[in-house]
Length: 102
Image (cartoon, rainbow, N blue to C red):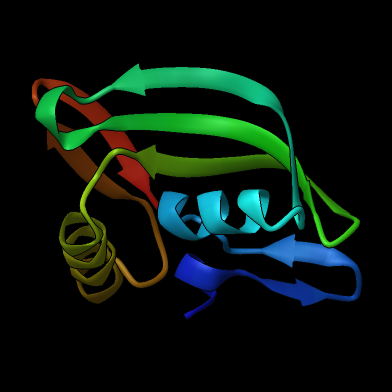
């Protein structure tokens, strides 16, 4: 749940990796986008972005989001990685681009 919706723990933002929820929070004025750090195009699967933001007045200096990916793709990738590599990095390749999910 925290992966998609995010949560606050002692003033720190945890999770919040869903670009759809991120967009909704930004439109509602609860999200303050501070810019992207790295951009990784994944063809038809969207783009993987490292971003900075403040959510509900709490900073998240580094976060990753799949932008343009379907919720079904995100759910399947996160589930697969959680089940196959519960305590480590999960190697993923999309359209010839390699990256990790943890």
